[in-house]
Image: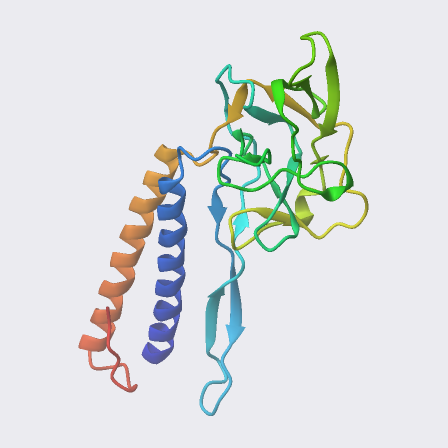
Length: 247
């Protein structure tokens, strides 16, 4: 029984450390534009081998994300946009694939590419990165339409240039990528005319700093309790198992 208890505590200890890692990352991103808090998920896995018929391990699965909208912050900047309600902005990832983000802090590169503050080109019509011609002014509409006045034209000669890829796949199909962007497993066309953006605003992180601090304290206490109990079991001399190196 003591040996079984040690295995339970060891697997629980690993899960607690995974939760602490996720909480630490959430705390570090409380000021990151449109950051979605991580929510670690765990799965019980059986151990195979002689003498291990009743042993299981706990493995951290791909971390889910809290997709609730963060608070909107007014900036007044023309190149700041925030998705209103459910929806995503299409961008091109480093590997060339189309990915999703809610980071609407935009800039124009030296080559005219419209991109996010973390360097991902926004995708427009045809699924290609949006490259802007030389402009005197630039406007983004609520429906994602990009328009502006070309250099050399009169101020009232406003031309439509492109349109942001705004999409709203089912939340259950959206997963976080390794590069921090998101992707959807849902099939079908990515554009959704119902998705709108608010210009002059940014979405804040939905990671609540107070809640994350409370989680950190809870996880720390759980870690301490688990290690103390493990030491108690080993010290009792009743583990009847191979000596273990405890934290």
